[in-house]
Image (cartoon, rainbow, N blue to C red; front, side):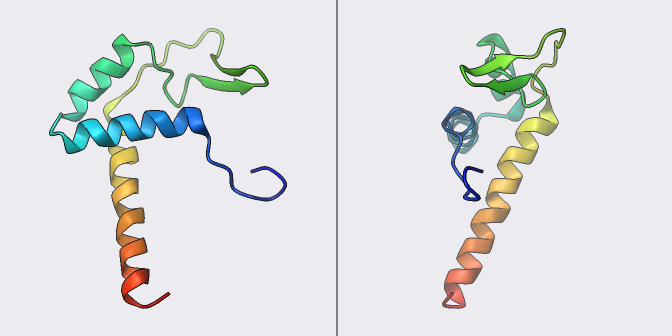
Length: 91
């Protein structure tokens, strides 16, 4: 939030988009996780934001796990379902 307004975090948005794209192409969560870890993409438990951007927390060796990807994909689908339902109700 900035000045009380929700702001998209572009770094995290790119990761979420990648996960959705790969999932919709038919990749299994394990394949997505392996790629994220191989490419050293910071997991939610590793990411620490500072003024210079995202950096790994010191002394953390947290890798992407199935639950991280599952939550991102399924929470996204729930949000999409909610938006569709609201559209149908004319809101």
